[in-house]
Image (cartoon, rainbow, N blue to C red):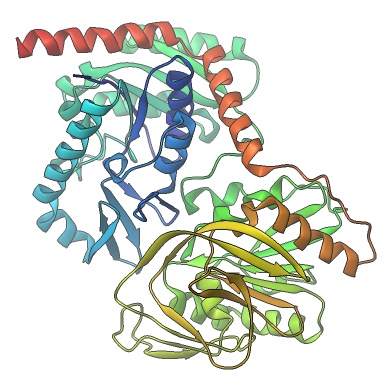
Length: 507
């Protein structure tokens, strides 16, 4: 029977680069011939990934599974927390909604159930795979939370995994954060840390070397690698904490200007990632009305709380600006999932699932009526998309709580055989769909952008890059980068030492 070798990565804080490092190690182990699985016991994220059986997990774990060359399962992320209000979140257990819970309620009522779920998933992965690359969350030194944490050192002990601690030098104070984290750990947990990685380094390594030497002498822990910042890495982001890094190219001369509305509860914003690699696209995230200006495309992305985010659009003045741009027929408006619902006439929430506002008017740009429901659709989908008199096969995934019906004649976007999905306005200037990942379909993205180019009097570009191929190349690029800058041999040795100790204890 297979017994997997585990390795865990924890960080000194959120956004230290754990997800990317785990992704790289999933690729490295897979390249080296090991059947490898990612694992994150509990993920808080609004970016979801749909498994082949229609279950919902954190997007990072789904992408890590892709890097490992395997199909994602809910055992790789048995608990997903999706914030939907200020102190409330939807708890997703093995890919299906469990219940909405307040933060304190989750800690007091869910802890023991959560531990059982984590133990069961770890046991399944351990029996199935040869390597498990485990991702922590936040920091293991959150002393106010550690009595009931389910994602850092308690998981490391459960898996008997050696831990690599990651510090982000880009934010400054990396030695203080690494040393402080180590000092706040219990001795058993501190002993479990086999070394540290300093991530996102820029500059002359020689200037850092005195600090590296001091750190190793002071803590007794080796520096296992200094990983230089890797730009333009086309791998899905973990969550909206990194949205500030989604900065447009400084080249303002790009021919197509795309404005993405960034509401407070934006979800699955990685839908727009393919536009960042297009040479003619300038992508901007919009949080204020005056930023909208005169774009060629306005994208309303997904939302974890459509009604509250629609209220934000009204109160911020962004909604009026969008309607003004539409009235002047100067932009294509495209809504995905929650953004699709917003484009309709009315959104009803009779049970108050999302908000105290039980009914709200939408933008009125598509003849749609949406009713928020207490059950969630999570499914991989595909069908025949018809746009500009061309038909093409497209794939995507749906994650939504709500049913949308046509109130009037509307040209559907995608024929799925048993049903039609999405809608195009009669003037072809407004498009909406529940399909996340719609822009990953290279043929449709090419047609969409060339339609915009034609409207601007520009020649078409037909040899656009395959985004999926680009992502595969990114996995290999990341793996090569880590191989060059991390002491993989030392990590391998430590992993085997932990396994030998475990076997001795078991015997």
